[in-house]
Amino acid sequence: MCLENGKCLYSVRGKAGYCSDFHILPGGDEGALQAAVASEGPVAVVLNAMLKSFHLSRGGLYNVPNCKAKFINHAVPVVGYGTDAGQDFWLVKNSWGTAWGEEGFIRIARNKNNLCGIASFAVYPTLLFIR
Picture 1 (cartoon, rainbow, N blue to C red):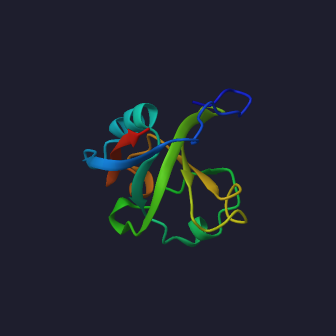
Picture 2: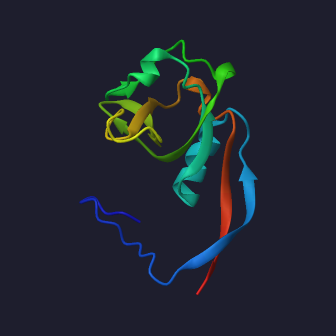
Picture 3: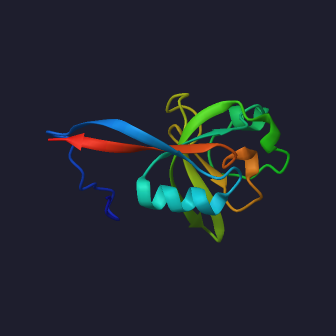
């Protein structure tokens, strides 16, 4: 859990565990994705990262209507969601380094008919921790 000041209350010290199961969310269901991110934490998704506009993202809300769900080709974790200036978004952590997007993250428009296929295939693990 993280506080408004950005400090998190989670400590990895002394924690070990393993993945005991996984859950696949209903394809294209942004509501199910939102619920899973809220209750379980980061959720792995695949999305369309083929467009030049995605590759050249430097910040701001990514809301490109021609980013279609049928061309999904890139796996990333959805780590959060929110609303900024009345626009719902998904917070996604990319693997292309901190020079890309917003220090390695991108905010993709949420509740826009599964933009970029973000909810087309989403999965999260069940983790069992060992003391």
